Image 1 (cartoon, one colour):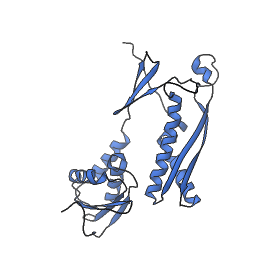
Image 2: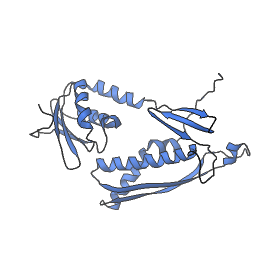
Image 3: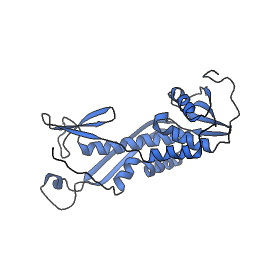
Image 4: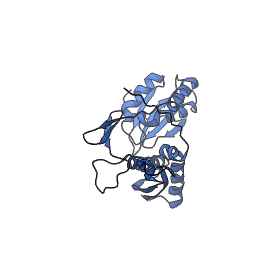
Amino acid sequence: MTDTITEIPDVANICDGGNLDCGSGLLLIIRKAMLETPQSGVLEIRSTEISVREDLPAWCRMTKNPYLGWSAGTGTNRFFVQRGGESKAESDAAAEQAKNYRWRARAHWQASENTVKVYARNHGWDVGQPASFDVKDAAPSAVEYVLNALAACLAMGLQLRASRAGVTIDELEVALSASIENINVFLGLETDGHAGFKEITGTAYVQSDSDDATIQKLWAETLRTSPVANSLTRPVPLTIEVKVL
């Protein structure tokens, strides 16, 4: 069987992954949709990410769900998989593994530059002092990274939800600003209050052919499900010890 399918099979179920690829959660969506597909039925998977063509067949071989091929579309590609051998228990185990995944970070102080080099997976970047008010600096502060992490998470989240809903976004920018409750606590000058965010405000600027009500609904869902927004608005236990070497 060739990779490009010549005759579209009868489809029992459809899942739309939007712009997700196999390494960004698409496989979890596929697994859930596969359980809702009758045995030996065909699941149609839609994604704008062409890399799915390279990664999906390997996942199908591993889970014993026959890969039937793909069809290029205008913007969205269609991939066809027949439900095969993966059980509900195996699918549930994969979902549980995703829930229990631990993100990791490492930070190393660079004395010569008075910055911190942080590492995450195959990435590394410099972070400056939290209480820097200069117009220019050697590196963004940790506070700015947190604020921009929120902006990026919201922008990517909205785009993902729009793509899965069939909504085209032509332009998208999220602008945020925030104030600290009392930065002097961090500097050791005062003890009243705390050195965390007091409030965050901002605007998401969206250019789309879709109507305002649809965009507002997608935005509300983006805010509700954002990992960074939830981390900022919910209590998070911190258990971080120090070891003297």
